[in-house]
Image 1 (cartoon, rainbow, N blue to C red):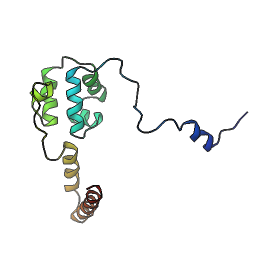
Image 2 (cartoon, rainbow, N blue to C red):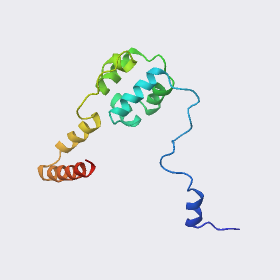
Image 3 (cartoon, helix red, strand yellow):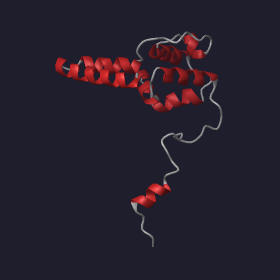
Image 4 (cartoon, rainbow, N blue to C red):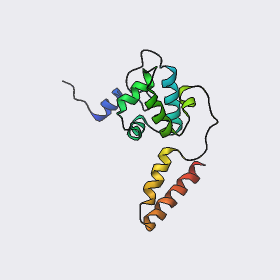
Length: 137
């Protein structure tokens, strides 16, 4: 019987990496509405889980709308457009507005959380963010 060491295990899994797609590959192409929804969600920097939380629905329902739903309800379209800060026309693909500048909903959530901290801790977080922004720029 052969024992596995960490070296053998790491070699066995070396063909897998972080850039690989999670889950199984979709069988069919997403409907146009799903493509628009996914594109806008990603542009706003939201994961499916974060988007689902903002809408008050499950992540599986977001997945359904992005991959399978060709005819979403008007209620969902209006709610999703509000969360994504876009028009319903853009969400259903009738128009494409110019890219909006400004913070994403996720950045606004983080800013809100920072504002609840004591002033001393706020200054620490702000200086860390400024340092990170300088390194990225």
